[in-house]
Image (cartoon, rainbow, N blue to C red; front, side, top):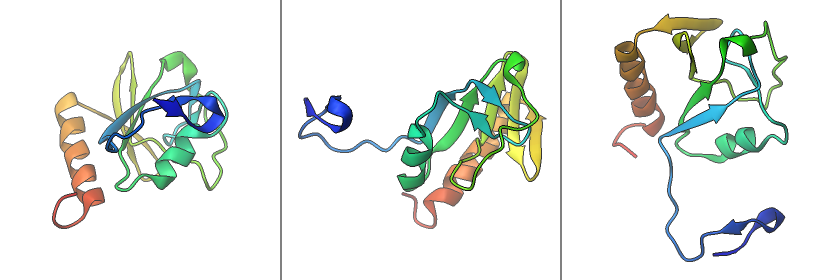
Amino acid sequence: MEVGAYDLPIPAGTSRVQPEALLIPVVGIGSVGDRLGYGGGFYDRTLASAVPRPLTIALAYELSRVPTTHPQTHDILMDFVITESGIEAAIDGGLERVSPAEALSRAHRLLAGRRGPGGR
C-alpha cells in the first residue's frame, strides 16, 4: 500500500480493476434516478472518468424517495434503483418497476452498449 489522495492508503504496484457494476448507497432518490448522496461528489467524479461506465445501482429505502434532488449537469443518474419494494430501471423521464429477470436482461444490454463493438 502507498499513500494516495487525502492520505488514504491505496494499492501499490497492482493492475487496475474496472468494475462492471457499482452498488451505491443513497440518502435520497428522485423520480428519474437522481440521487442525493453523502456529499463530496466522489461517485459522480469516479463515474465520469470510468470507461466503460459501470452499471449504477442505487440502494435505497422507500422512505428515502423525494420528487427530485435537483440534479445538476455533472450528476449521473442511476441505471437501477433497488428498495425493499423491488427493482426499478431508469427510462426516459422516470423509473419503471421491473422483475429481477428483466433487470438482468436490461443490465446486460446496457453493459454491451457501453463496451461498444468488440467487447471491452
